Structures are given as C-alpha cells and as structure tokens.
Length: 258
Image (tube, rainbow, N blue to C red; front, side, top):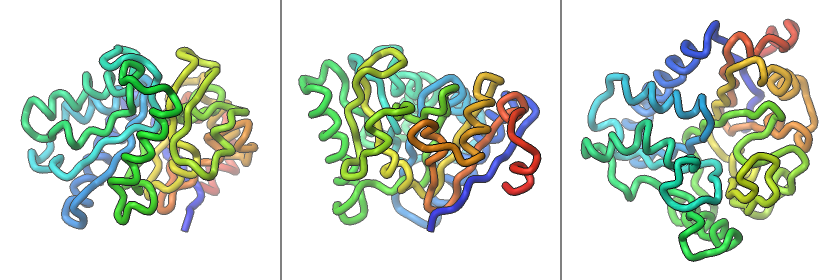
C-alpha cells in the first residue's frame, strides 16, 4: 500500500547529510537480520555524493555490507570510468573503499551499461532491465528496492525523468533510454517512475534555495508530468529530507499535515 510523503527538515545541509547517512546505516543494520539480500538504488548529484562520503566516515560493523546490492536510478551515457558518471561518484565516495577493504565484491555492484560497452542506448536500457529481473525474487518482475535515494532538480526532475519527458508516462518498461535531456549529457539511462515507485522506501534529499520551488510544488499536488517529484510514492515510506533553504516555500498548513 502506497503512502503519502513525509517532510523532515534540517537547519543546515551538513545536518541533513549526516542524518540521512546515519539513517541509511540504521536501516541496513535492521534489514540484515531479516533478509538475505538488501537492494539500494543510489543517486547522483552533489547531495547524493555527500551522503555517501558521510557514510564512509561513520563507524559501522564490517559485516554490514556483505548482503547489500547497489543499483542506480539513472546514469549518464558516457564511457566507463568517466568522472561525470554517477557510478564514478559512488566509487569515489564509498564503493571503492568498501571493495578495497574486502567488505563488498564487484558482483554486488550493478552498474548501468556504459557508452563504450558495445551496445546502443536502447540495448543498454533493455540490458539493465534484464539484470533487474534476474535479481528479483521470482524473475517475473524487477528488483524491489529496499531503499531508493533520490535527488530532486530545481525543475522537479528525479533520476533522469524530466518535466514533459516520455519516461514519466512509461508504464510497460522499467528502464528507459533518455534522449535530448535538458541537462548535459543529452543521452542517459533511467528507471521509469513505476519502477522507482516499487521501492519500499524512497528518500528524496534536497538542499539549497534553488530547490525550494520544486519541493513546494511536489508537496502541494503539482502535476507529475510537470513536476516528476510530485509522483514519487514508495510502497512503505516516502520522505523528503530538506534543509531550511530548500523547505522555505512549503506552506505551514502543508507542514502540519506531513
């Protein structure tokens, strides 16, 4: 059963990053005792990277990670190892350190295909969907993420689902090829909105005054086609984590309802 969104605010960006990092570790510790595999969808963006970096600096049990599988909600269609790819950022801030320390293996990291993979954009999208299905419980549907971390753009986009894009309307596929993105690079890969909304928990993290309008619209019933973040609904928990600047336009009456 889907749930409406909650809003948690922090005075500063640093407090937001630290708190979400701690919550990720707490969630992993809780899930580890209940299930054999934990699936997390990571995000790109500055705040997303800062959260991973914060986790890397925190204390955690070494055996916390051996059942965690890492996915991405979207990726830029660039060569493997390009510094602009979302997985490069995740490697830099957390995953490489976990690998070096022997806490995870490459088999737990599920990267989107890269531009130099030998396949075209559409084939790459289809390939990732196959991998999502192969790691689902019965292979009849895609992986149900235990947690999806998302950023929100100033225009209200999530993953690489931009206002007015066909990906917002996609219902039959889980991974889409994105062309003519309003942000460079123009070609990307992204989970569709229904795939994102199959997540048990979705935490959307926003910081900065430039995100204030997007957050306000997402929480006040904006059209999903125009503000994709407004259409995010996890099956168990949907939560916006925002610093004071990002939350400044949210009306008091809306805050009281969340």
